[in-house]
Length: 267
Image (cartoon, rainbow, N blue to C red; front, side, top):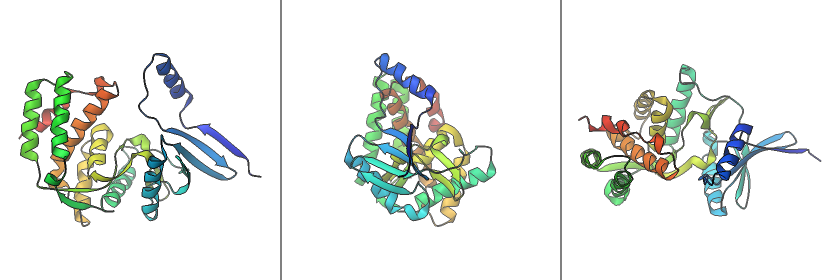
């Protein structure tokens, strides 16, 4: 019989933090439970979702893209729990040219996987962005003058056509591993389909990649697209407004900085 060993994916200090937040009555908004399980020599990451539908969605995307090595290999799903193979390696370094090249290959491969060009008017993305601006203004995180200026800028940047497709929306450095076959996105909960392409890269740019992310779009276009460069400012504004509301709702208002929107007002 193989020995089975399990441990929590969060370090001890994070578990203490979560326990302290619970004592203070602060709700955690991430409802997935993550851990590592060793079945003999087979080491897996185990993710338990709130319901089976979400687990099925993730399983479908993992299976559909398993030949691209973008995400951990799927092992098994049982109701609302998914197991994937543990991927050894290290987090990418923002000053490591080899890691940045591997990151570029990750995004290029992902955005080439299944892009669908569609008219923006056939979606509600623009209307939702303007509604989120109203939320930020109503909460007092930006003033009405800035909200109005950003709405005008959004209308000016509004493209006729956009690309929807596969994206990795929580593209923080900690959610990637540089392994033997390149970069792997290990946060399987963050895999999305029919997403506005570029949202994941926009988050990476905002949080850690900075303007290095812009060069990834040149490589993407040179390798046959989709060419996201004409819509890049619009995509980034979509991301920043969404991210700001997300932080508000998660009680992380300090991450919302009105100054982050300044560059979008420069024409």
